[in-house]
Length: 497
Image (cartoon, rainbow, N blue to C red; front, side):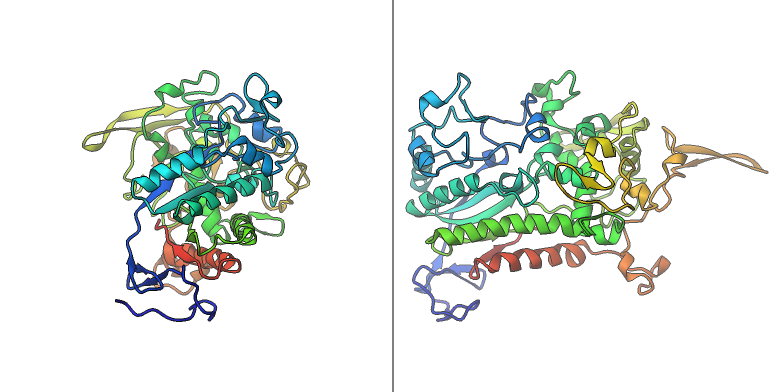
């Protein structure tokens, strides 16, 4: 049997009987026994609110544009009406008696027609336990915590989550909590970040489909004539290689290096986004600690962000599809083509790929025309006057010019030199010459670390970036350090990129 310490390696305090160690790649209990944990996700439905599946367009934008967004109360499992009554939910959701619901099953704008006395949580947890599962990867999203705006946390949802955790403990489960994301957000075709993060990054979410900066299930193929039933299977994953996700993850992990002009509330957009993400999850950790009896007894630890994506960090040539892009399905613009589409420019000859039993196969090309629709939000649409946002309250620096591609703002490319097919004609005394992608001024902009200028032995005196070492690990250190302030004994579960 492996030898175990008698005191906490984190705090030096004596260890309680329920403590789980991590030794020699094993989970080990206080009796020096190796614990073999059988785990399962709980659960995919947590990526969207109750009654708001990804194919429904009605109310999708309005809930976040004109209100505080949708509550995730009811995720990952629903409780009984009596249990919700005991939570003293906020105005409009306080009591869930049948006569409080309208004909559509809505209470205060939140759908509760499935919130009954069925005891769903207990039934499902008992079933999982009977099947032999002992560990739950408990899924929640950043949006679920902070959908109402920066630092406006949904305490009703947190109270609900704590009640579900208490049920997990009662059924004998160990848990680790997963702040889940896919391709950044529900509003970029996946799940994770709140709506307001897109506007903070200068993006107009209503322009995502027209520019193909993201493919959204409920707007496919167009918002005017949606046909979500024909949304190609798994094509949502290609959003990682489209402009919205490429930009958002680059800003989140590496904005200080690659977007130094993007300053909001006096800090770089990287620090702004990371501080809100870390702040929201650590607030949840504090509330779980205050509830008592859950940390270490039930909640073993915390996942890092699911599928952390490097964005364009390390991209060798913006004029080409990266060699590492394994998933090709449907239209596959290069980053250069994506940037032009984002500025409303028609692009010809974008590669089209099918994906079958033997993987991706090139099947011709397509032309895409946003008809002048730009991804980058105008100040009027963003409700910003002199850089101050009227709704969300942030202040944007004067250098950050809204309505303009932030990568053009940083000199990566020049939209004034762009053409639909990427080819320009240059005249000289020797005659006219056709040059492709002349508008892309720095095709390897994201390949080298600006902070290493004059230090490297590569062209320009810069070192190539290493996403994990340079950007992911520093974020993870900050993230787990913030969580340890409330959960010092946590076991970190690390998600690779």
